[in-house]
Structure formats: structure tokens, C-alpha cells
Amino acid sequence: MLAHIKGKLIGFFFGLLIGNIPGALLGLWLGHLVDKKLANAWLFNKDAQAEFLYTTFATMGHVAKSSGQVSSEEIRLAEQLMTQMRLQGEQRVQAQNAFREGKSADFPLTETLRRFRTRVKDSRNLLRFFMEVQLQLAFADGELHPEERRLLLTIAVELGFSEAELEQLLAFAEAQLHGFRQGHGTGGHTQPPAERLRDAYRILEVEEGADDSTVKRAYRRQMSKHHPDKLAAQGLPKEMMDMAKEKAQDIQQAWETIKAVRKIR
Image (cartoon, rainbow, N blue to C red):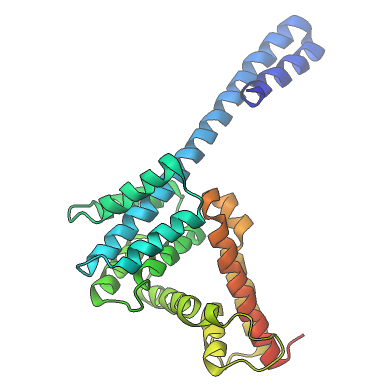
């Protein structure tokens, strides 16, 4: 409650000190304007985050249905993500309804994505995070169907990504979900399997033949894109913070894997 009148209180007391009663009244009015602006900003942020969650699950439903039949693995992944986000009660029902709406043949995908892109102010990091969640769903059943790939390209282009960038995102997701994450705990200073090392390079989005300084820059670039605090500041819903932290941990593990092999200090 105090947060909604904080501007009025500060304006009133400063106005009173500077200009007695007339100053206090002027400060009260100016404080009211500040409170109103902050309240509107908070409501917009709340609405934007709600739309982020809706668009995420509705698009996931559309991707799941694109191959014809929604698999049990895809449904399970969607439910796992809801649990990971700690969606309960009404929030979980809304996410389930969004997934169900997305499966509809007449779901307005283009309109939904354009509205979402405007909401997040065209933030590349948030849009990339959104795409990575969709790719998790696409790989849920262990393979990427041709129809899913075609739809993912449509989504990527609508959000401002090129086909080449989509391929990078696909490599990142496949390395993260099918190979690298399964290899955690292999030991930091022993040479990892070739597949794990390959996946580490794919997660950093850098060629295996790149020199040490290039690999280090790639690691820093990926951490900058996926840093949870940075994503939160740009509008990532708090419910998705654990997912962001998980991705950042994978990037850190990929860097540690490469460092151990190259003996980088």
C-alpha cells in the first residue's frame, strides 16, 4: 500500500520544506503523477510477463501439433516446464489452456508472435530464450520432424531470426538436451568423451578449431545472452528464472570442459 503513495509522501514533505503549504500541495500533486506512472509501468510489466507465459505455452502447443499427433513426451515436457516454473492454481490452468489453444488449427500464430515481439520490445535475448524453450518441446520425443522444423523456421523468421541463426539454435538445443547435459559429472580434469567435447563447442557456438581467445569470447558472449539477471531486467518472467539459471550452468560447464582439454587458465 505504501508503495502506491510513496511519491505523494515524498513530494508533500519536500514541498513543505521548500514552500510551506503551497509547496506541499504542489509536491503532493507531482508525487501523485509519479505514483501513477510507476503504477502503470508495474501493470504493463505484469501484463507483459503474463503474455510471455501465454505465448510460450500456446506456441508450444502449436509446435507439438504440427507433426500431426501430440506425443505423450511433448505433453510430459510441457507439464514438467509448468512444474519447474512453479505454476500452480490459476496460473497452471492458464498455461494448460494456452497449450490447448495453440493446438487448434486456426490458432493465430503470426498475430500472437507479432504482439509478443512488440511486448518484449524486440529484445534479442528474450526472443532467443523463447525460441530455445520451443526447441526443447520440438526435441521432446527424441527427433525433429520435418513439419516441426518448417514451423520453427516460420516462428524464427517472425521473431527476426535468420535460417542460419535457427540452425545455430537447433545445434545449441540438441547439444544441451541430448548430449551435454547427460554428461555432467564426468570429472573436470579428465579428458571427456569426444561427443561431450563436441557438444561443448556447439553450446558456445564456436568452431572446434578456433583459437583460445576466440573460444573465450564465445563463452562470454553466450553468458551475456543467457545471464539470468540480465534476462530478468529485460522482462523475463520470474517463473522462468530457474530455466535461465539452468542454461547458464550448461554454458559454464561447456566452458569448463573446453578449458580442461585445452589447459586454459
